[in-house]
Length: 537
Ligand code: ADP
Image (tube, rainbow, N blue to C red; front, side):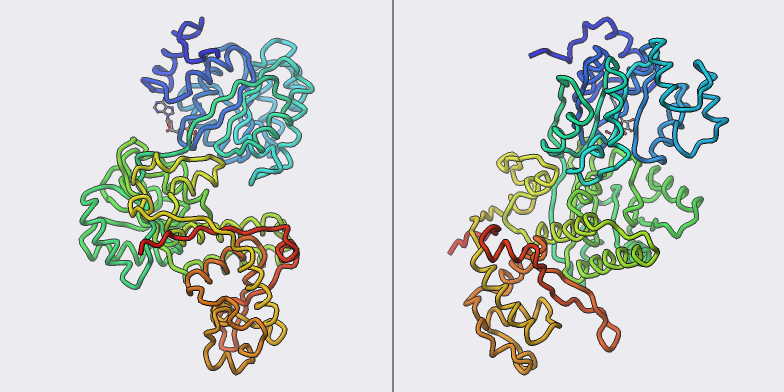
């Protein structure tokens, strides 16, 4: 196999010097050199690299070193503008090419090079004819694929690049791609025998832990920071603006240097606290997830989630803001079922508001949001499997738990589990639910749990649940295992929690059966498996 990391290419000296002189980097990070060499050799290249891994340099450096123009496709205008600005700050001629532009701006780009025709297509044609089109760079390439979680219809058009410009090399980069998505992207873009660069998304220096969130969470966090991270920089992610403020105030009461950050602060205030934190003038930032994107503080020693994240991918990114310098850092997630309810209500509200404002959120996306949340809950409920293995599975990477070496709470505890087929249990539970629904359509997780185990309260027995055929069909299942089974069925879209208002105006979640997926379970097409802790005596 060819070694792309060699440094005897004709450009090897120059890229090293330019990397230092223009970008200020003294060395390359993992795979950067190989990627640059491969794309500069005019090969098609596919790059899978975690966020923060340094993807931009892989196309910015060749663009600067080689004659001609690189066209970078990126899904977000804000990302494009950021990039254009930082390139210009480094003295590199970069332009934004997009729909929102005035004709005048487009003309300006043209004046730099060539003709006057105001369409991107003819700009590209002209560049190509003059040998000035260096390469196409597709950033966030997973957006091409409908199998990915961020499919963008516009990205589908990118197949035209290869059709119209056969000889221009393509560099596709992403931080999220299963092999299915990767093949789809490569096919769609028409990549020819692409050189592939993949690396593990595991962050070995991050220690992962999930804790139960109780009433004493505030003092637990203060005590933890004081004991383990005294004088160090960290982030506490909170659910709401009010929480950010409360947590920051609570920490200050305990003598910890903390401030809050959220969208309600003015732009100046936000910039100011952010700077204070970057300068270590304050140590702990209590923030909503709006904080952290694009911020690159290398020595963040801990990221605490005061509330659970919206998805496992989200958690990986947020926790990943710790320890960019490669030194050991801690990621602690506080879980409570009450928070899960808050989040799922927020999801439902977002969907509802979207519907009312006439921009109904796509059904697949709705399902995705609900599934994401259920996956986080399963992650928190799991006290057996390796946290790294669980997280990386969501990023389509297989991770061998023996490599964790006790760097997550579950591996450290030494607990192990066995996977069992719970299809029959799930079927019994489902028939119990159906019977309950036939008498009363307002049933909650708790009511089901109790009826399934034959432990209904008096008031629920009065509703007639004690008389159904499957009352107590869960035998001697524990509350927790019945709960886990219910959550699994919700996460698999067999059941659905729907929020209603009670007479007194409190929100409450009732369970519905989703026939689409209940059916395959009942007919045996769908099987369910669950990991159980190995009891040790
Ligand atoms: P990605 O796009 O993969 O998320 P970026 O390209 O934004 O990552 O890079 C993340 C950070 O790493 C940036 O602050 C960048 O300046 C820095 N970086 C990239 N390459 C290097 C390098 N070779 N040496 C030091 N820092 C680097």
